[in-house]
Image 1 (cartoon, protein in one colour):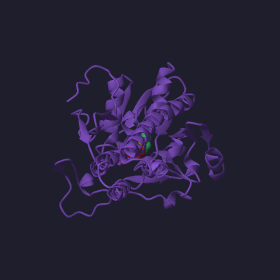
Image 2 (cartoon, rainbow, N blue to C red):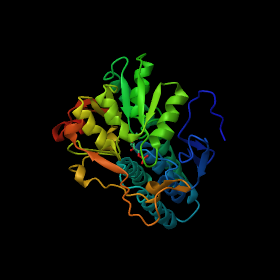
Image 3 (cartoon, rainbow, N blue to C red):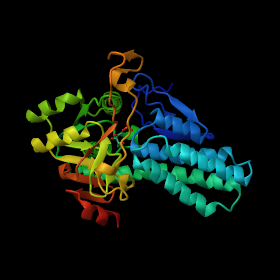
Image 4 (tube, helix red, strand yellow):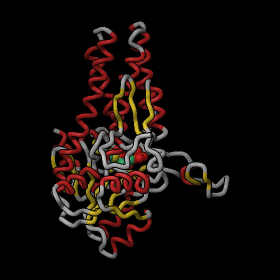
Length: 352
Ligand code: MRU
């Protein structure tokens, strides 16, 4: 176990020797441990079981998943190599459905594979690994650029509500929504964070709270059903969240409960910002109704870890994401700048 008692930067995913290592986010904050991955199937399982989560981090993991598979198969025949890689793509694509960064990263790695498919297998594997490294490094650069644009939107002294975890843990580093907050703090603004606990997987209580406490950024944890009370009392100045997929018309899919926060924000005249790398925009999806929404296991709702509080046999729904219509979004914060009141035309112009 790594000692994080001293403030230090952590790497959500890292290449170590010939393995991908990822922080096991299921056991944070009580334990800080890395797990090692050596194949696409293992990485797909790590994504499915949420060892790694958050749209950009999932994309990075998937890129490494394909590279690991190529390294594993580099001494086999060309046919076995191609078939194995295809299977790896399939396993990774089937791991979680909503975060479009997963498919974006797989498409990017596939394009590289197509380019180099006639060279030796070791050279292909090395090239895919180099691309995975680049996906990771680029993600941090993008988050820093988004942070710089978004920080300008937050006034000094702002009390900022965020939902789920869109921090360093959800990305290769810095974060999207928490990246905006970090950049504002770096710009010497006095920012405090209100973290929704984010039922049922508790990404806010476990991960956002941990990141902020670890970094010394003031954070107050609330349960999801307290946001309305806080806004009505004038205790929240802005909302900043991340996203798993933005449709061509600007509708935003994010962690379940985000829509509720957006409706409350509109009611109370609180700006609702979405930090969104361009890789999270899916122009192939016309609007929010077409975004695939993951349904997760009932056991996440009926209890937590080993403890079950609901009666056995009760019917449960567990959609992991909801969709906030574009009309409730004050602005999208991207690496190319801020898009106020996003709509189909503005998104198309942004992607051109
Ligand atoms: O189910 P999760 O934890 O993967 O959901 C994550 C979120 O909803 C984040 O807000 C989103 O991926 C943006 S992360 C920068």
